Image (cartoon, rainbow, N blue to C red; front, side):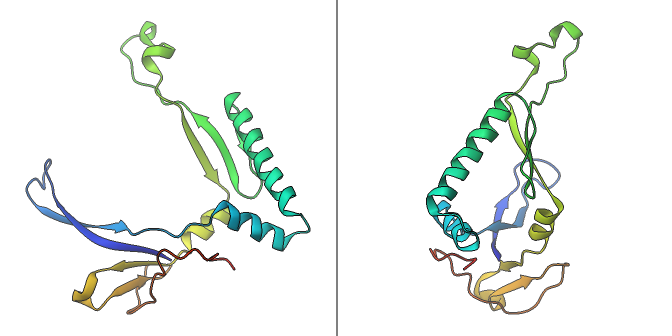
Length: 161
């Protein structure tokens, strides 16, 4: 579950200048730590903790090497990762140089369908404080349901356990 709170600010530019606008801002998100990931993989496979740690370190090294070579790296069921270098629009062909036209490289991750489906199925809620009686979860598909459970912020438990 991703919990959001309602925040406000006064717009300083544009058509809404001077108006107070309200928006959803994410509260602290639970984190699946490296230790939790390792423990989960150890539980679900016949690999030892050391094997999993080594595999994750090796994966990181292989991905970094691929990115340094400008390659796209296929991460199986997760998706692919690549380097993208945005370019500025220049007036003449001669102005297009590495120094002047190319911006800072960015890492782009393109998830596979399974990951996109997982992201689209996350339960969302907006906490409007005590004025409306608490959180109103928004379930996948755009519907809402009144009430909701506590977010459990700050828990160090494995949410997948």
